[in-house]
Length: 188
Image (cartoon, rainbow, N blue to C red; front, side, top):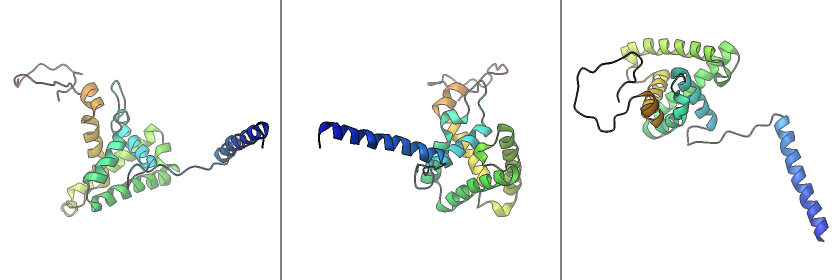
């Protein structure tokens, strides 16, 4: 094989690769989502980010998605939750997606902001009612777990701690009564 034949073979091989990938993408072939850890894949993390962003939306300050709250939840559930609570959490994510399909004929991640808010408001009311029953004290509601992790992940992140809360690295003396103007950030 001479140099010219080798170059034409390589060009043919590379051209086939580019064209082949375009055919697969046009045909709707999707690769499987990348696993983040043993329990969650990248699609799960994206969905948790959207749930968290619905709970703490971006306004003048960054929202929960800016703090990468979905990735935080994936780590916390994997490393800190018992296997029973992990199952509750995972089945809750599945339930939210199934509920979105039933109500709006679309996955949760494809819903608009108002539809997401409607769904999560109903889930919040459901979890409050669930938590009031003494029989349910041992098994938490999945939405309560999602909400708690959202708040913990956001307000302990750099974004939440510096852009939303007022951070004082070395606080001075304790002042029980300090002037507060509406709109001032809360002290951490």
